[in-house]
Image (spheres, one colour):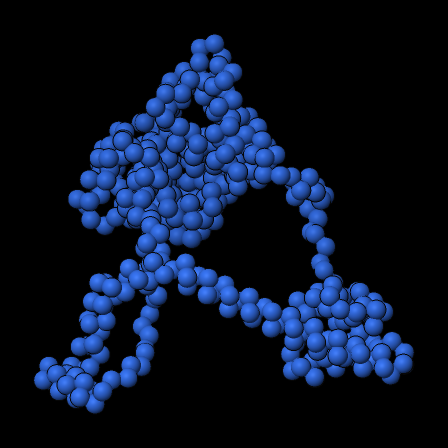
Length: 381
């Protein structure tokens, strides 16, 4: 499809947009294309639908493209941020434009797009939104304000009140900069260095709480079982046992308590059953059955097997789409993933690993040639 044909489909003045059905048909034609120009064509097509039909356009676009709703929103945002006259970076893929679409500063956006040819999409995303380092993760601030109480001497309190009165502000306005300065100079490094110790203390507290819970639960259940056994009467009804335990402890007999009691106490021997329904719990719902029946092999397959399935699906879709001209690997990857989604093959979770394996296999067989993040079909193939 030539650029003129792409423009003809995406130009709102064309008669293809006379109705919603024509608009959907144009989308079907666009989905079959490849490359950044076609992805922008889809984005412009979606933008027009958004402005004319609103949310209805997204419902129809999901059917036509197979894209997730958030992907459609990203396409529209990219087309809105980069009108046709601003798409002037030949070395940038559509995903490069998409990565910087949220940058409001035009100068910063141009500066980032100039680097698009020398970096991957992920590296460009990191420049837009730098990922937190370990140091920053430890010192990440909690959202919202909080209050603390600090004991000071009478003299210090008087001085702070007088300073606040002279400035016409609250005492907190004077104190908060002092706290912030201390955190920047001393507290920040102390907190980061002491993070392993804080983590260990938190783990110890959780272990202590767990041991207390085990001890209390075990003692309460075994004590009640002992009372029933001393009566030498018939086996208690499981529901009566649960009610008696809840009245004695003031706690809820949850599935966690039930599982613990069955494994670690004589509850099943005392009540004569291990069936969870007898204790008042709903039955475990069976796995839903699809039209094709259960899929135990997919559920039980290892990640290695799933990657192999994804690679096989990618190879089937990728092979007929390649030709003798060079294409960007990122563009090809986006098109193949969209096709996987539209066919509902279910391999998107391991798509990245499967795509890399498929490329390596095709290159080893001599069917494709890969150079500098570009790919094309070999003449022998």
